[in-house]
Each structure stands twice: as C-alpha cells, then as structure tokens.
Image 1 (cartoon, rainbow, N blue to C red):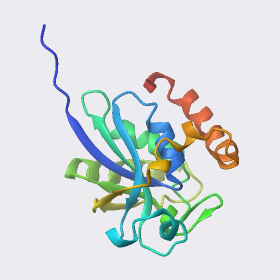
Image 2: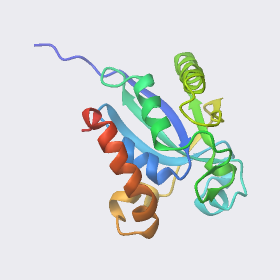
Image 3: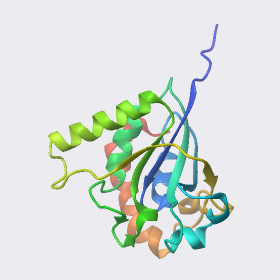
Length: 182
C-alpha cells in the first residue's frame, strides 16, 4: 500500500489579533502548523510591545503551513474571511491600528490569484455592506511571535479578551466549518 506524500505549502494571514486566527486554524484538518507572529516590518522591531503599540509597520499575522492534499487555498481563504471583518481598515473591533490590518501575504502566484478572485467574488456578491479592504501583498520575512503567544487561547481560555472576543468567534466558526475540523 502506498502513502501519498504531503504537499506542504505556506500562507500568511492577518485578520486583527493573531490569537483568534491561530486558535481557529489550529482546529482545521490539513493545517500542519499555525504560528502567531509578525510580518511587514524589520527584525529589530518584531516584538509584541512595539507592534501592539503601532510603533512598527508589522501586522499581527498567523503563518500557516498546510498540506495542499488535504486543504486548498480557496478553503483556507473562505475560513479567513469568516473569522474577521475584511471591510474594516486597520482595525478589528476594538483593536485599532495598522498592526491589526486585514492582510493576505501570498507565497506564490496561485495564492495571489486565489486571493484576488475571492475578494472580487465577495465584493460582487455584496456579502459585506462595504467593500473588502484586505491588503494582498507578497510575503515578506516572517518573525515568530513570543512563545507565550503561541496557542494563547487554549492556554488562557479564562482571559477576558478570550471570553469576550475569541470564544464567540470560535463557536460560530465551529458551526460553519464543522466538516473541516480535526
């Protein structure tokens, strides 16, 4: 019996605070890793305090490594657009600043094409009352976030932010994408 080898690929997504995006993708079949971190700025400023204070050009992001044999870019982006409001410029809810921008950092031409296509469909179908402002940019150097940010929601479910913001999003996410969960 032969086993199909994995087809590992990477995409990096920013949709507000990275804790929510990471918590959701860690539950999705085909996602090998979901790492919270920063993209868009320099190595010297890739740290939580300056990023969260808006002192850098980084976005809080989650870098996904996925098996394209199990999940495709289209499915990943459908999940992404369900996890945040892509029509809010440089914010998600109470998290305000360019570091919380909606962004797709693509790693190849197919990801770029898929991102442009799904954004056009969302706008054409008027899924949101306002146009999508998600930035689509070629991936830059990724800087992994501090260790305490990795798996933050699972380690801190009683945190007020986790209870008020992440838990409701994850409940809705689990209902919408039940067949995609691990």
